[in-house]
Amino acid sequence: MTRPESAAEVFDALGKDYEHAFRTATAQRAALTDLLADLPPEAKVLDLGSGTGRPTAELLAAGGHDVTGYDVAPKMVEIAREQVPAARFELGDMRELAFDDGTWDAVTAFFSMLQLPRAEQETMIGRIAGWLKPGGLLVFATVPADVDGVDIVFMGHPVRASSFTASALADRLRAAGLEVVREAQAEFVPDHPGANPEPHVHLTARKPS
Image (cartoon, rainbow, N blue to C red; front, top):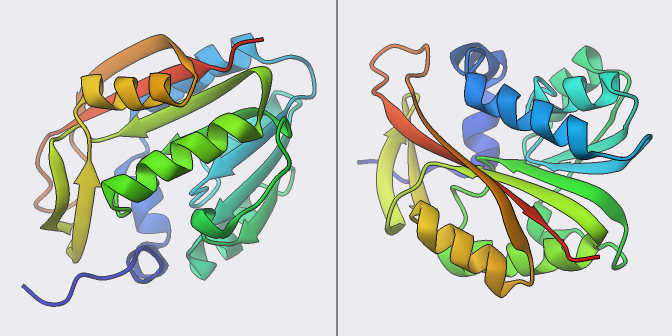
């Protein structure tokens, strides 16, 4: 296997192909529908790994919320700005972001930490917990697996992936002081040549008021 590509390299190359491959991921849309039902009016929402802006930022902005997305891939930021003008999109590595405690009503992270080592994912979860307002929500989605730094091929690109099992991820959320209020698991096959079924887990956690 060749050198694992960075997230910026992978998603700059994929562009809209990523959106197309995952456009029928109904579990993600269901998690967003539930989040929309829980948010206060005009909520401030941070989307980490915002990709092309669809469906996450697009649906949240259409619901009247103030959405800011960050992505490490310049091409994704460019596409998102074109597709979802109602939200803001910035180029940035989530590990380098800094916000005051209690800044956000909600944070979403849909599959955007899979290329971070487990230790960095745990650090990010702790930082997000601080960024949330009391009563704020985190929606975290991943491919659940007991792996740390395994080399795989994703949509034709060599990557190094890390993840937790669903129960271990829930434990990390609780350790950060969050209450897991919703869990949904599904199996999904991306619409891409050679794609195999992959498990998905969506966890919603609330910061105590």
